[in-house]
Image 1 (cartoon, rainbow, N blue to C red):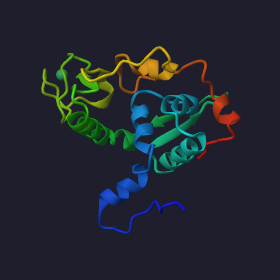
Image 2: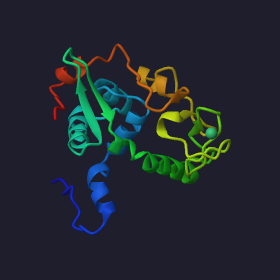
Image 3: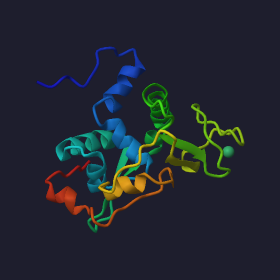
Image 4: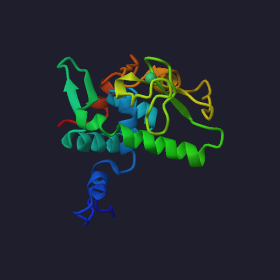
Length: 190
Ligand SMILES: [Zn+2]
């Protein structure tokens, strides 16, 4: 038996938000989208998520206008954050900061920096150098003091994400083509 995905409290926007991003895996998919992971196969590889579940979550996120599904007609399908999806960044950032504060005694798993001046961002997303609230495309993410280096068996997507990179900068691993999406019988169409 599955739990209903809607909440009875129609007067709480948190309940409405959770109907979109509150299911297991969904915020991790959104986080990966911020990290520049755009393809079904790369998301599946990085998250280790069952393909049917990934299909399901992507469909919901596309339907809700959080992601767009871009098909170039030549077999490459990419999922990109919309403005509405990008507006989820403060939620993702705050949840990562909360996890760092209470579950990462060695410090932040990942540091966020303002790419323009290298300033560290505080938990509210403000740059310690210039004081600005850094917009998403100007944020660089890199391993922090609490980051545990992976072993050499890291999948190629995770290996790329373990370095320093700007948010939204696309990653594409040639070996995980879109054939994965079709081959798995998991078309995540609109
Ligand atoms: Zn700055």
